[in-house]
Image (tube, rainbow, N blue to C red; front, side, top):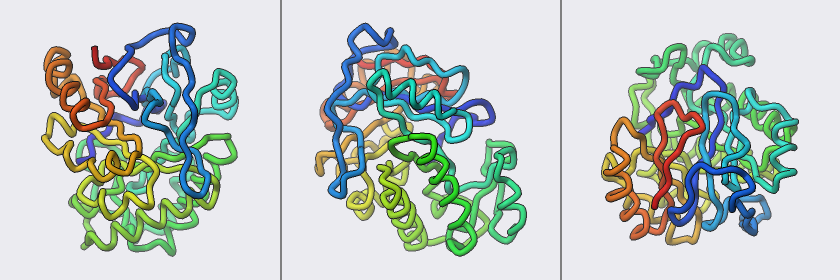
Length: 283
């Protein structure tokens, strides 16, 4: 279920988390920061009343009326994070934890241990699945990435590609392998005082909900699996369901996905697949 936009350009995540309201707007036009949610151990997490904008390409637009911004670990400077904090926003750190991207600054760390690099991630040039069973090798690399998020002042982490066991990775990964790795990721984020989202691994949502602080999902309405998000909504945690305009027209989104989100107790927005600043939220 991983349907990510191209991340070769600057990446940033911004999505709307509650109740279907507000479109693209200036920061001063109603984007009132909400009271932050927190995890049982005190890390920040989006509340169900936060708004969330997802942008993974182009120049970051800090005028979007959203209380949560989710941005790329490398392509976002600490000064941008600080500026968003000054505006009353929280900032989430996008970082890949399940695939190797050959353009990243730490690519040499993976190349030094090629045994963990598997099949290409279809449709994403320069990206390859990782053997998540080898936490002995991947652990220090991922921890350094999380440390970067912490050092830049991010509030939480959005780990991508954490459903490798459902893909043709080149490794015999099992559901148990994925649970072990994903729980390890959550523990590493929390050890740094950072919240963490469960990204797309909806088939394991019930098992992983206690370890993760909110859920971020792509194409659930278009692909008919939004009901799998219930473990998070039942637990009172925020769920963000992102749909794309190459799968749904704006009219289909407004008439179908928005109604489903209201019934399901989660938020949905419509984005371009490249995740630039544009978004359509529910009427």
